[in-house]
Image 1 (cartoon, rainbow, N blue to C red):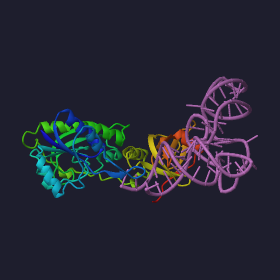
Image 2 (image 1 turned 90 degrees about the vertical axis):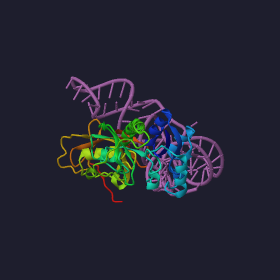
Image 3 (image 1 turned 45 degrees about the vertical axis):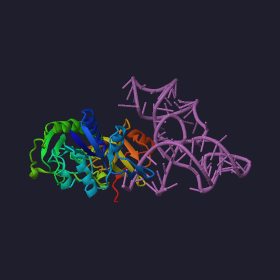
Image 4 (image 1 turned 135 degrees about the vertical axis):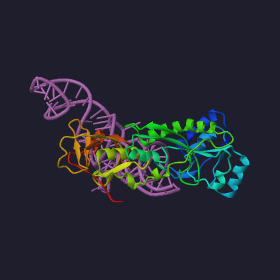
Length: 316
RNA sequence: CGCAGGGUAGAGCAGUCUGGUAGCUCGUCGGGCUCAUAACCCGGAGGACGUGGGUUCAAAUCCCACCCCUGCAA
């Protein structure tokens, strides 16, 4: 089977790896152009490019796949199917029409739930206990195509966006293979999404990461879990010191009666507890701006925290 | 040459501007108090102050170069 693979982020790598392992005929790997990134603003290749290069695959990095020349090039390759995962560009109708078996995409949610750029993150932020991976036939919309296969997974309380993303990526790979194998000359069996039940998972913003201590401990911890890849959940302390919350857990606490949300309490065994709108949050690990990740315990010692000190919100 | 912060005892930090024998909160070791303790009291050990050079009677502190770490931005 002649395959063109389109992907950019880490999420796509297990899928590409499986295609290689199963001896699919990979005509080429299409990925986003190198972008300036990291400290120093150097030009860095996307993860898929690195992986593909290491496996001696041809890599193409069009600024836009919809450009006429690139579409012409894709046609010449005569792919049976185009496999898409974490690619980052929309495919125009003219591309969708090229492969006889269609353009098959893996999306890390139970479509039609969580359409959009950040389905994993939003599932965590919303406190879902279950999510999954959906393979679908791409159409012109944003994650609106017909469903081929779907697999559910439980979300663990310890899961963060990075752990869950990793797990779903490894689930997406066999699901894509299965979809491909069920296609013979034409698109694999598929059925339309129930569009009325669609929900959306837009790209996260930095502002979203700022903690509102009025919210419940559960909501705050879910935010921390869902934003760990980016932008992280953060708050402010002292002289506008920005502090990222790396790892925390909701706890019950006896006397949160008249202390306002954001107030810190240090337990006898030096745990860092912060009162929330409902219940309280134990901060296990934090990261002050410009510093390494440290434990709540070290934060207390180094910054001389006292019960009654407060974390606060800051307008940006 | 994208912007910025940092590298001081095992950990987390102060001290650097205004040079003058290194400090805080802990940990650790020993002792004490206690029915007991993560609590309290007393005492001890532990630092080439990132590296190399320079200025100076004297450098963690001022000047120059380099190495490493981190946040922002993308």
